Each structure stands twice: as structure tokens, then as C-alpha cells.
Length: 475
Image 1 (tube, rainbow, N blue to C red):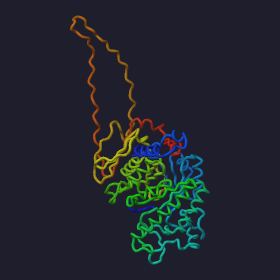
Image 2: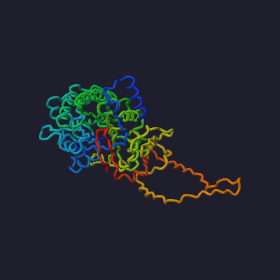
Image 3: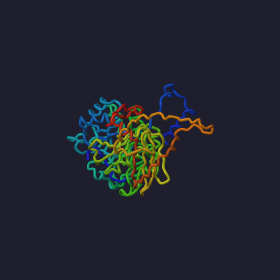
Image 4: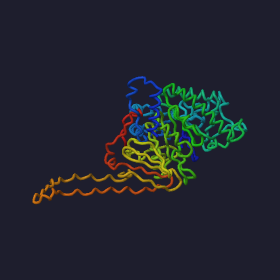
């Protein structure tokens, strides 16, 4: 895995919202200009693509492709040249720099020749902390520093310490402004230390108190860093974990530019249960954020098979909004730019909000397609709309032009006064049978599209001007 990557190994009404916001504004707001009143609302398009490019330095070819393909890119701090090239190729791509909130590191690359590297994966260098602020290293109840299990030379820091928070904020905000990044992807805004260490923090009695101390500290830390970056017109997008366990945490931590869900569409019970994302309050909070369309919603689905890919993309489509982006992850170290053929399906714009059926299946309709997600741990059925096909189906053959038919002759008989005019009778139209129900296995999904989209894909393009992404040609 790359040194900057911190992988977790644990399982972890669009239109209605717009109407509520509009009604609120009409009753309690005064528009500042006619231009604001006339501006069209952002469109809830199918999920855009993004690249979590922290696994290795990107090649020139990958940067060229990324400028055409992705709407958001995350790179390591030492890849400023790649960031500037991306901005040159497509100024509307948002390029975020990776920074870890919770650790400092002293592996090769973070520390070289006994000195902190010029560009760090964290906010505070190991050497600087060691020499000037050793109290910023978190310690367990035995007074020992806490090294993360499975990640050698990653050291837990005192994220609750106001001085550490301020130093991290000052250093990162200054770097982001100086180098020209659009914002920060802040990793390890976690819920529990237990995924990295079994240690109990000094001053706490048990694991529960340790985790509460970390969560409370990260709450205040995010507020401080978020305010500073917002004032600098930069984004703060934390990688928030396990928000289904703490209602309101996703909403609070995504308010400075968005948030990342690294285990989106994850299946519970070791891969035998339903979709974890839909448990608790998490999906509703993600849904509200997506509907508002004011901040980035960056979703990652780990895909080891086609079912996981389908359920991940379709679940993201349930959250489709102006700033909802999805990527699959086929490796644990994010070494390759990712792309799914489902991102070429051309769903278009959502025309309704996602809705949940009584059997636990969620569905949503788009201008050019439809998705359904079985979030449960058992097989379910759902009735699809008529006339749609799976994206992998072959394009339909061209419809032949109908041959002209002669105009029928109307015959009028006048031999008898009781004989009326006669003409060929019109056949009774026959109704098209409804498509058969679809069977969805547990935690599976289906994506269906208008068959005409399969013909148009060669010229179809994604336009996200409302997202300030620009006009990017689809692959």
C-alpha cells in the first residue's frame, strides 16, 4: 500500500428538499440580485466520476485522461506539478490534497535524512513534533506512544489538543493557499481507535472513553480547520467513518465542502448481510446533503465482483445530485485510476427522489434510465419500467422506415336508402404486456437504460456546468 494511504479493514427527496428551500427563501429571504433569482437550480445528474489518486505518482498519460474523465481528483502533497497540469488541462476539475488528521509519520518519504519532507502526508511533521512538541504524541495508560497496528511508523496524535489543532490548521491552510490546491481531503476522521490500536488513551478508563475523547476532539478539530479553509475559499472534505453509529456526525463534518465515505455500499456480516450504508441514519444524511447540492459527496465502493460494482453505482445513483461522485476501488492501495462501464450508461438526470418500497428495495428514475437497489439480506423482486435494457445489452438494430401504403378507397353504396357508407374497420389496439418482475439477490442492484442511449453513447457527453466542472467528454 502507498505510504499516504490509510485503509480501513473493518466493515464499516431531491425535489422535496428544493421545494422546501425555495419556500423558505420566498418567505424569509430577500434576493440580492435579479441574476440570483434567474439562475437555474443545479441538476441532479447521475453520479460523476472521481479519482482517489494517492497510491502512486500519476503518469503524464494518467493526468491527461483524468482531465477528461474525472470531476474531482485527490493527490498526495508532493504532486503539486500534477495538480497544476490538471488545472491547466481543465480548470474546472477540483483537485484536493491528501492530509491526515490523526497521525504523523516517520517512514522514508515523510522523513528523509533526519528531516521532515517538504511536502507531508500529515499536517505536522514527525521531526518537528519530536523536537518541539513531544506532548502532541498520544500515549496509552502505560505512557507509551501509540503506533498504528498494520501501519508501521504511523503515530497517533492528540487530536483533542487545541495547540495541535491550531498548528495543523495553520500549516495545512498555508500550504494549500501557497501551492494552489482547491482544498483538502482530510483522512482518518474516524469513530474508533480500535481499528488501528487496542490501546486505551492515558486519562481514560476504557475503550469507550478513548473513542469518545477522540470523537469529541475531532469534532472541534474539524470546526477549526473548516473555518480556516472556508475563509481561504478552500474546501475541507474529511474521510468520515462509521457515521451510521453516530446520528448527525456526517452532516456536521461535511459542512465545510463535503465528506468522503470510503466504505460506501459495504455489505454487512462478512459479506452475507444487507448494505451497511442504509443502516441507521447514514443514508438519510447522505441523501439530504446530495439533494442540497452544496458540497462534495465522494463515495468509494470496494468492488471484487460485478454484484458489488452494480450495488455501489446504483446506490450512488440513488443519491445523485449536482456534487455526488462515485468510484469503484479494485485494489486496496488505490494504485490505478478507476473506471466502471456503468459510468458510461448515460442515466441522465434524476426526475424523482429515491423511494423505498415495502420490501426494502430502493428505486429511482432518470431521464434515460432507472435503478433499483436491494439493501436487504434476502432476495426481493421489483417491477421495472417498460422498454429499458441493461447497459451491457447490444444496441438495438436500426428501426426500418415504414413503406408507404396506398390510401384506402372509400366505397359508398346508394342502391338502397337503408345502406350506409362503409369503410375498412379499424382493428382494436392491443396493449403491450408489462415487463416481468426482476429478482434481486441480497445486496444486489440493477441499472437499466433507454436502449436508444446505447446507440448514442459514441457522441454522448456529460455536462456539469452547475458543478463548475465544465464539459467533459465521457470515455
